[in-house]
Image (cartoon, rainbow, N blue to C red):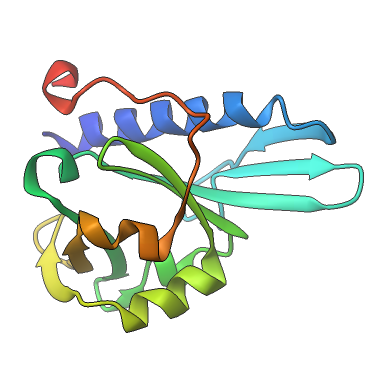
Length: 154
């Protein structure tokens, strides 16, 4: 799948999650992050606070039985270590999941995983782990819809 297609799918997944947030009872406003190298994808303002979300997906997990989380790109901290979002939302293995970013980074250090080069000319470093580990890392969000299988998107 091309980089452009992956980016397009990522944007669609962000929109699905934003539609879910619209029903949050104390929500005052929602906005997508603007620009490149942003600190989060979605910002929700409530009456009492601002909550930010990084929204990612791993559609290949449906085929491989593995998930990956990028932590370095061109020798610089990326995705999981570069984000400043309060929460990580992850669509993986046909389910929606969420976790506080600080807790997810700590949990990732303790699970069984491999580190691999991948993506964008193998310039990214990834944590690779079995989908069986997802419940140890994230809480499930059962209210969100299952998305079309990857083969229907291509």
